[in-house]
Length: 97
Image (cartoon, rainbow, N blue to C red; front, side):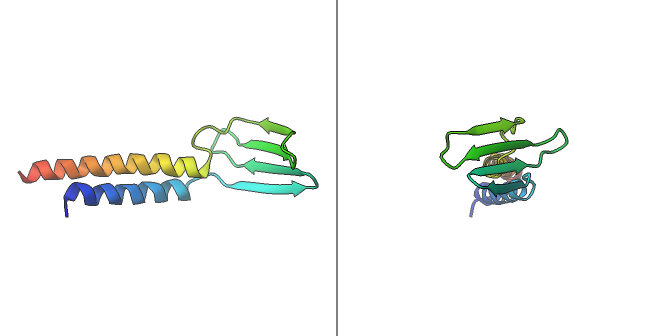
């Protein structure tokens, strides 16, 4: 198999795994008709979102950012890992020639 493809897949898997394992934790608390979601932030704090069951009431405190969501963080880091892996495979193929 081609070195670029192997390192691309390894980069995607490793990047996605790092993104999944380093994502901030989210706790969901249900109080009657209200659902409160608290996200632990890195060093600058976290965010809190409170939503009513009917979806009409929503209060958000703090800015979560693109890396605050576990799925988005996993996708971004998997893409970065894939690019790094593909670049490493490309460099290794050039070195052989």
